[in-house]
Length: 201
Image (tube, rainbow, N blue to C red; front, side, top):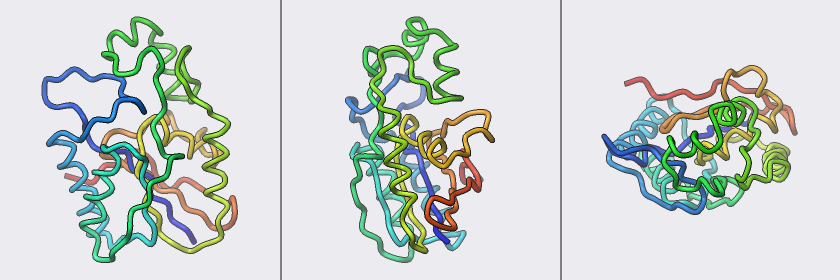
């Protein structure tokens, strides 16, 4: 059996700071609360006796910092691999835009379709077919291992579409500092165990 732990990086905005749509072109680090979230994930996995045989992260600093914090809490050493299929999407004209400005441009319904169905709003640069294919290729491996995959909200949802288990969820989103677990019992035979879980505080 192969267990895949898909993690969204921690917070990138501090208290009182307006949230923005940060994507692939906006490479910002974790803020203090994001570092706390990353450490909490590491402590939770260690407490649950989960160590990793393999660890992959998207290339952005926020995902690498989160992965490093998780791995530093693990009793079993694991080298972090950078994987571009875990990179965040590009929000096109809305990249690094204030959330209220993005909603004013594309509307609440477009955001809902993105969160529930992964249909990108007009102007966003998302090759959904390539992303789903990359996840399916990853699922095709015949191994028994625990794998950590640290990515961003825009990228993580395509794992659910590739696993064909998105219909069981009201939203495809992962909150910052949250994880999902996908269990693979054979090549391409995958099921979602849980989604959008944060370690208990």
